[in-house]
Image 1 (cartoon, rainbow, N blue to C red):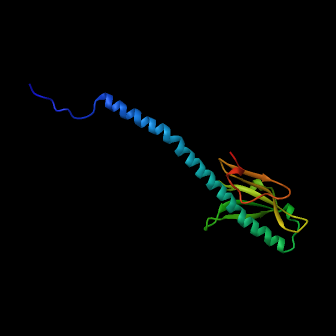
Image 2: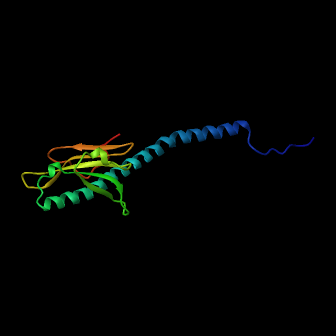
Image 3: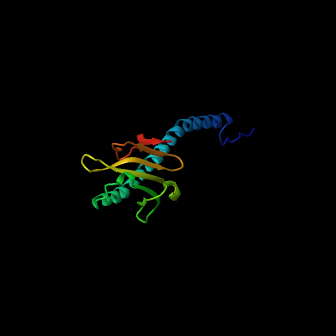
Length: 151
């Protein structure tokens, strides 16, 4: 009688390996998905904070020129420039008519009457997934964090 040389795995061994891989995937998938979501949220918040910088520069320049009527000044962002910063543009018309990119938003500045400092009274920044919409007549707190997000 000739002995057969067994090579390979039995059906039971193959099923055991598939079950183990399924358990590992079931444990790992939610963790990986959470990491991806947190990364996307952090990137969005960082874009919002980058949007803030050039708009503050423009508003401070207006304020230094003696323009104390900043409570009606609004700035929006459309596309980003070559250095990756958002181009902030002063608006004299409706905000919504000028939105041009995935990240859009506007900032409304005011002047603190007590010490003539620049304050942000309304900050709105959005894309397809997230929104930061902060409004406070006495000034919005910056920089923004993931706590400021609304999905």
